[in-house]
Amino acid sequence: MREYPQRRLRRLRRNPGLRALVQQTRVAARDLIAPVFVVEDPHAAGPIAAMPGVARHALDTLDREIDELVQSGVHAVLLFGIPADKDAAGSAAAREDGVIPQAVRRCKVRHPDLVVFTDVCLCGYTDHGHCGVLAGRQVDNDATLPRLAAMAVLHAQAGADLVAPSAMMDGQVQAIRHALDNAGFTDCGILSYAVKYASAFYGPFREAADCAPEFGDRRGYQMDPANAAEALAEAHLDAAEGADMLMVKPAGPYLDVIRTIKQALPDYPLAAYQVSGEYGMIKAAAANGWIDERQAVMEAVTGIRRAGADVVITYFARQIARWLAS
Ligand code: PBG
Image (tube, rainbow, N blue to C red; front, side, top):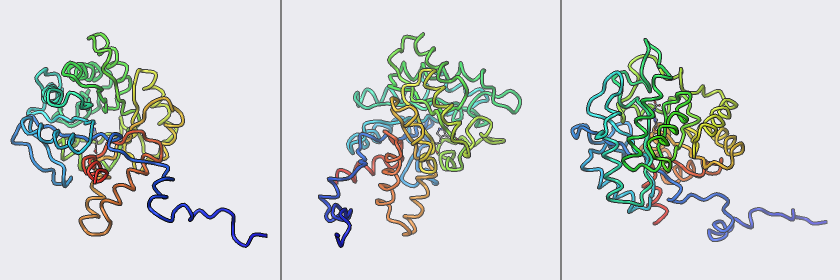
């Protein structure tokens, strides 16, 4: 009889080379998408208090930000626009010379190989901060669809590789797909925020995009954090409507959902969005000396990848890329 167990798992943990050899999940800069906030009004540019290390960029300083990202090894960005003027209909989203069409053009001129995603939602453009147009105090789903579709077409026309609808309106992927095809943009893809929960972790983003709802909340259109099976319904519907990639958002508190969606739709590239509040928690704890920032970030992002996400959208993208290269 053997005195020791035949299999001793510690044998493969003995040194860094061995550990690297048997590592089962890897994070690479090419898996990351960096969100970037672009403001039309240059006076609105500057740091975001609730997101240390993240800033709002004016169009003419955007180049520098993108240069730095590319230089660090990040190859993909997700652009969020904040227009100079907001109104009830979010009409600034329908302008051909709007902040995002301009930003996309700049990015593509300077870095033709950069993969450019654009957020398609009205919340940054409406004065009431909701993700669609209102009928009374409700967001009118079907009246919002053509507006999102028109916005997506303008982004495609400017050169976006994929548009990313985040408004959580039913039928938005189909409406956008039809509009893109009718306008001749059959090659522009859709990264659907298919599974987006009504989350407290979006708090800091609402300062960044100046889009906190003026009344009520988003629970009438975003998902209940308690629901997992419903995530399957959302993902299957968006796949059927023509999504090219799917997303789960937030990421960290929804690792089970990431796993479920990856298993149910393994043939769709899956993104997960480590949102502003997830970023803020790590930043705040690290600033207090309570956790090691680098190790905590890598552990969180590795966990998101291990759960099944192919791609991670994260405000840490540049920092991670730099760490990986160092
Ligand atoms: C807009 C949108 C939000 C986020 C991404 N797109 C905010 C919201 O739905 O309230 C949140 C991103 C983050 O917190 O980092 N619909």
